[in-house]
Amino acid sequence: MSGYFTYTAVRQTLDGMLIMMACYALFSFLTHRQRIYLLYTGYILCILLRFALRDYARQNPGQQALLHLFEDTFEAVAVCTYNQFAIRLMAIPRHDPPGYRMLRIMTLNLIVTACLEWIFYAFRLPEAAGTALFVVSRLQLVAGTVYIVPRLLRRRHPTLTYFITGTAFFVAGSFTALILARITPQPAAIPPLIFMQFGVVIEVLFFTMGISAQHRLDEQEKLNAQAALIEQLQENERKQQKINHIRDDIARDLHDMVGSDLSTIAMLTAAISTQTAPSRDMLRLVEQTARRVVDTMREIVWNLNISNQTPENIAFRFREIAYEFFNTETTGITLEIDPVLASELPPEVRKEILLIYKESLENIRKHAGASQVVVRLTEPLNNVLQLSIQDNGTGFTPETLSRQSGLQNMHQRAHRLGGKLTILARSGEGVSIQLQCPIQLTVPA
Image (cartoon, rainbow, N blue to C red; front, side, top):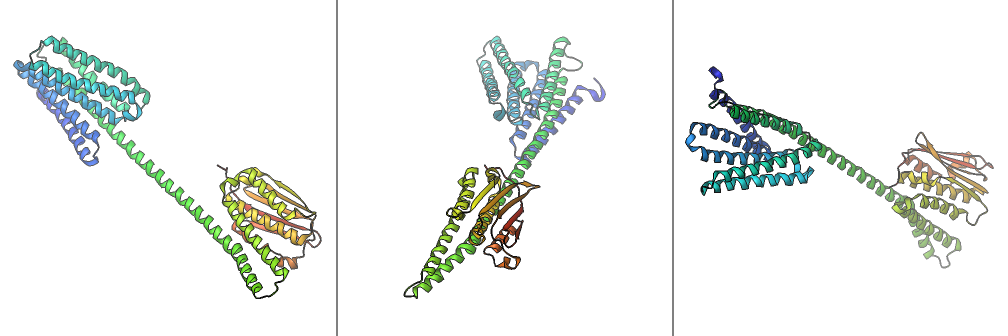
């Protein structure tokens, strides 16, 4: 080799590339504080020291035994570092525990073998014993590699391509160097070590790309975790808003219905306390108002109880309300209500529909004198639910519409649902109440 392509020039170029990659890995460790970069730096430095020892042994043949021992030691440290690097790069403990255990066994084998080699050298044991130890150790490494590589290939980790390709170049370079060392006379024009170092440089390049790919994956996982956290926070906020909405509904119901009725009871009892002989009508009014408070509280509690949201309980509630008003009357009532549909209504919608339904039946009992009432809750068309309540009672004229009991409350409830309440009535022809409101059905948990 001559000119710029002398062995020394090529070695310096390759060493310089490895040193730059080691510096890159070290700076990355200082920046990101991830141990994988430190292992990567250690692996490159061990390879550089091993090459340097090989060069020094070529120049000092008299110290071959000791230098060879140092070279084997640095090779063992490099392979141990390589194993730890692979473990962290592909998260092997989490995805492949048996493979992780095999890598730990291989690492322990290298450490024990290196220690025994130094003991053999210190006590001047026969060279054949050291050779046998080395062969047994490397056979175990080959067996472990044969066990692990297929498992890694089945995993298809995103960084596996870089890892396998880099390792393949290193093995190819080492194998080429070994063959050339056996078949070419020494000293060779092109030292075989050059091919091994070329393999190492290409291996390190692929490892660098693998680390970059893993870093991108880690960043993407962080972004996904942040997105999931944001979604969870938004979901919690929606749940909190729903809870606040329920609280507001309870407060409004307590104020509008329970509060006014309790005020009525307070005024009636105050008036009764001033009378020496309270009238039966006034006492009956107190009783009716108190019962209305109890019914309202019962309605609020029923709507809050999650166990009541089954189709069976909802169907029972519709029948129960009907029987409360018509159990002693000669009025027949027909309920055409699908309990499954009712159970799929959002709780706030179901609550308002039940209250409109109850208010309508109360008006029919008090004012209509009807013999037949038909209630229909029809399947939504274009996400618009329809509730129809019809009777064949006396009806009323438009002039008396504004004076009918509870109609204002029913209109307010329809408005809260974002819907429309239509009341069609003629004197002597009964009344038809139609509620239309937009909904989004939910499947009960």
